[in-house]
Length: 400
Image 1 (tube, rainbow, N blue to C red):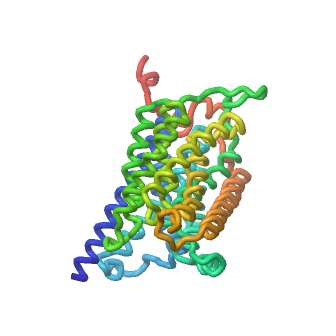
Image 2 (tube, one colour):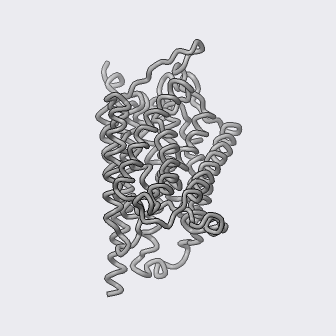
Image 3 (cartoon, rainbow, N blue to C red):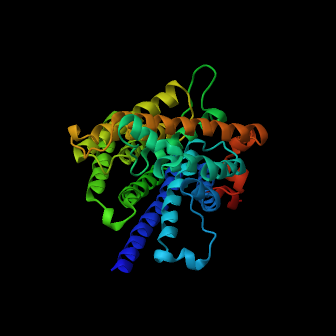
């Protein structure tokens, strides 16, 4: 029976890893549909290469920093417990690799390829595991300190803060250091629209992410005996709340409608195992409205050229999710308890601070010594031809 249970746990977390791996296709197509056609190939290549680089640095460096576990022993030692430790690494790798996938959407259309690959290695190998280990492995006494000060450790069941907010705030640093795409904003205050190239691809990416998210959240239990249907229903309710509020607040704009479910799902990750479904609905609804409001402000008022709106979507909605777990997770508001508002607030602020500071250090250093941006001619030509020497629609190259 013990062998059967171990094998069931391996299969359970392996299926979760596969579902979250599939979400990276969602990241890719969400970006493909949002950027202009001359940058679609670059979006696809970036997501795949970033995932592969993330795998290497997380295997050799990052996972050890976060959990103190290495895989340099014999094959026999790695297959103990049916290889559960290996598939757990695979599962958590898919979370780690989401950080550069998030950043990719913010810096699209003007970032150089190899400097971004370099940034991915530093983020996934060093920066992200630092905070991941603090929260999910109690490194540096961070969780003990929070529990002593505020009565509970920081609760982030599936990564509203550890993954999404962290990625969104790293992306904000990169976007600010890169600057806006050429021609996006004029000196007299004008704004040049850069509309999505393909709403169907954008919608496909959103749907892939939405479906995969149920593996992202539910399988975060990591053991079959710990799985809870509450997580699935809370994810569903948050998705619905985010979609409907984004529909209304965004005035039927399809870009807002298809990012609405993602906003709700980002926000519910942290407290999806604690909240009542009505609390999850409220959390998702607030996130949907927050995304529409802040995307509009950043793009039109503050002139921050975050192409996919990853800072509002992941950075702000993720931070809201960390705080919301300290509200709707309380027994007084229908939750299961074991959280405090102050712990969630302090833990969220800590994640934001580390991500933002680390993002500025990594991208700032690369900008000084290597450079981040394509030059004006390359950006006008498009990243597809400038970097990859082929376009997504090569009719003009094949027709004479």
